[in-house]
Length: 330
Ligand code: DGY
View 1: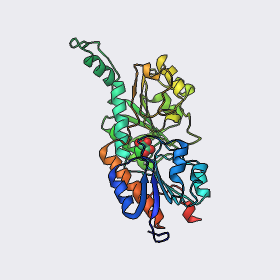
View 2: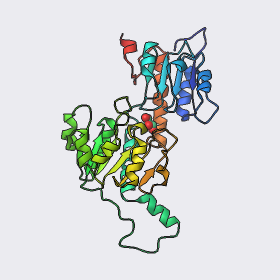
View 3: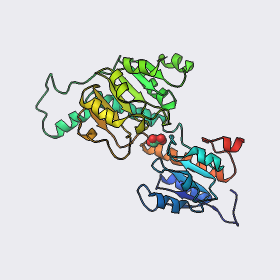
View 4: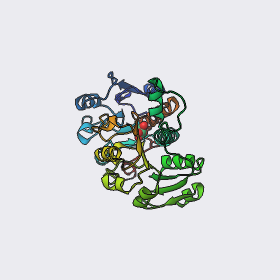
């Protein structure tokens, strides 16, 4: 690693991550990990970044231009997530700062969680658990908590990247018809999973389960709102494990309350950690606290990957998971 005045370069980590990543960083740099086990305020973030060469941050940290400007030395922003909508990448590129993410290692964990939500909302698992714990299970009842079946139904996958494909793979095991929408068709996926490319509107009209796997960009923000709920079947379920602002959450509450759709399974929210008014009171929604990548193995791999990205950048090498290659390829 390049040394400054014979010393190690400085890295700031905005919250404790699995030790394996911190150990990698400590070997080669002077690391400061935020002492607060919570999301930092803007001022705390700026103070932590002052003078550092590397930043390892989380999806809960808003890394704007003025935050970056707290350190004229900043060479790399390593986001501990695959999604990087929390980083102003254009501002980083302008400043010659590399931005990296952690793709691939969380694909299976996130696809599994999307399926957990598909199953738990349609089969009313959370309601059943609550009823049983409350001592209200009085014996088998032919009409108790009837839900929607999954096998042989139609699943609509919005965003056929790595995670969307992993969801499609799992859907083949349920003999489902697979529809998908993305910027353009991906013929190899159609062959592999028997998936069919359709417009978003067609997908919304035809699917029994709609699952979102698109990145959050200005184009995808609010891609699902009241017009889109109006297109869905009354028996449809919406699952979101991607980013909350893909969905107009107030419109979702209304659609769930008015039974425009049958239910939803959410791992992400428009204004995390806040929930839209009324959402938590609805029985036909399953709510999780952004657990998509939350397995021990996955979070450790993410830590290794995020640390490796920081170290590569500080050593003047090309990080494996660079999202703004134009900084190096100018
Ligand atoms: C990501 O990596 O973008 C996920 O949301 C974290 O779970």
